[in-house]
Length: 148
Image 1 (spheres, rainbow, N blue to C red):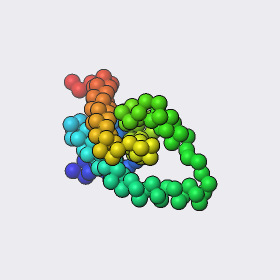
Image 2: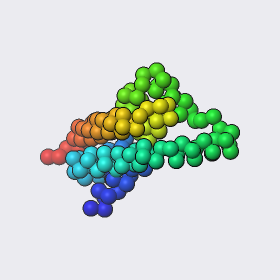
Image 3: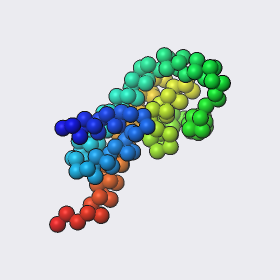
Image 4: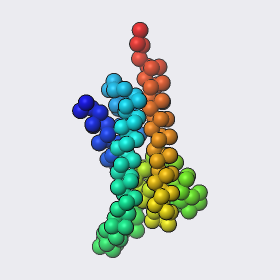
């Protein structure tokens, strides 16, 4: 039970996310279905918290940037370029691979996407990538491990 809680919490942490948690959970011997479901729930929970608390976070980052005189990271600039070129759906779908789901959602909101659209596209993206990472891990793990 503790391992499944760790999957949920690991997926909720922005730096770790689903790309790391799902393969680790499945390789550890946990049920792939539960790992995928809990990873989705953990990651989506913190993305929804970010979307709901967006205005407060935006003001905090603006104060921090003014204080440091920082123009943003390479990841942020990449996300802005994707959003401006292709829009929210591509930013959300590419987010888990390129920049992380939390940064993708935040950049989308900063660049004017509606909260509801950001939540919907984030959910679609996270669900899709959870299934992809889960299936690839199971298929790859079965390829390397002889279970007979």
